[in-house]
Structure formats: structure tokens, C-alpha cells
Image 1 (cartoon, rainbow, N blue to C red):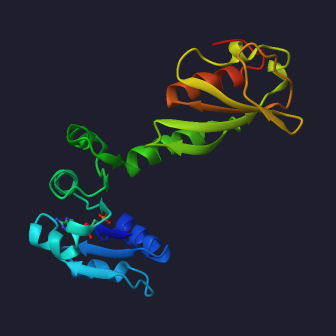
Image 2 (cartoon, rainbow, N blue to C red):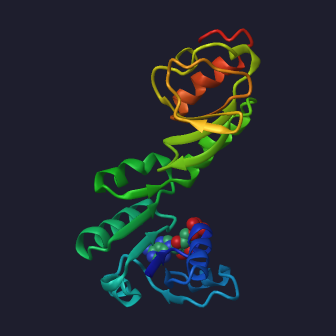
Image 3 (tube, rainbow, N blue to C red):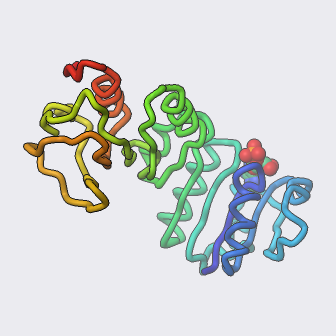
Length: 221
Ligand code: AMP
């Protein structure tokens, strides 16, 4: 694919190199040519110095025929505006933009852009890792709004119903593995010690579920 990465900083340089390694045609743009020094020596994509807010630069980067554009500068306004232009004016099929400051997230939402907020996602992950229960996050969807967790059923929840364990909101069972066999779990099934449960949950749903699991008496919270 023909891909453009705008902003050769911490995220952009790593992403551009990875895309290049995957065999894509990559052009990376930055207004500061020193930023290209951060690229690995064996990066063989194109580098283009210039301000992404300048349409001549965008055209030189190949935006008219690009299959995908990623905008990850350190300025949220730039990311939102360039992402919007790429999506609406140049009709680039796939546009993803980075959100630097979580408080500016609303700007992206107004433009209906696909956004990744590394700081928001990172803070959420750190919070999750701080909790003691060994529920392992195995997949993160979107920007981490919904994640897939795997954990084994502790003693306190043996012979209890799955419906008692799961909170009513923000948590849905995806699979249950018992003695090596996976099944789609029904809410009225009885849990066994060591069952491996996979749930998709929001942060709020997972917080309630963690409290229930940690409660040694197996009481609902
Ligand atoms: P970082 O702060 O490490 O994520 O890097 C962001 C990069 O975006 C820096 O290398 C900046 O020079 C670059 N940058 C910021 N604004 C623009 C812009 N308007 N056009 C092109 N590159 C930009």
C-alpha cells in the first residue's frame, strides 16, 4: 500500500519503520529534517521535509493516490485538520490520527476521525496493571474503550452462577474453557474452580468484576 506518515517523532518514526518492514511504500513527512535522524538506519522509505498544513507538501507526499494517511504530530489541531482534509477532500480510504492531549479529544470526535490517544490508553493500562488480580488483558479494541480479559474462576465462586459474577452493565462473557474445551457461556451456567473465562468489558465493568472476584466470600458488590 502507499502510506503517508506525518510527524517523524516517537510514534511516527516507529510506525513508519514498521510499515516499511511490512513491505509498504512509505513516505514520512516532518517539518524538521532533524527528526528523520530518529529513523532506523535501514529505513528505505521516502522522507519529506515540510509543514503538513501546506497542501503542496501533502501532494508531494502523494496524498492524491495514498491508500492510508497517519497524522501523528505533537499538535492536536494539526492532526485533526490534516486528518480531516485527507478524509474529506482527498478521500484517502484509511485515515488514522494521533491525539496528543486527551483534553482535546473532542476536536477529533467533531471531525469523525479514527483516533488513537496513546496517553489516555497508557494511563488506563497502568491503572489496570496496578490492580492485584491476575485478570490478563488479551485484546484491546478501538482506543481501549472495550478490552478482552481472561481469568480463572477462584474457589470463592465455585458452584455459583455466571450471572451472579458478571455485572449487569459493561461486561459480557465471550468464552469459557473447562478441561481444555471452550464453549460459549450461558449466564445460567454453574462455575467450576479453574474455569478459564474470557469477557469483553469496559473499564467500569471490569472494575466491578475485579471487586467481585477479589471478594473472598464470593459476595456480589
Ligand atoms: P513527537 O513529539 O515525538 O511525537 O514528534 C512529533 C513530530 O511532529 C515532531 O518531529 C515535529 O517536528 C512534527 N510536526 C509537528 N508539526 C508538524 C507539521 N505541521 N508538519 C509536519 N511535521 C510536524
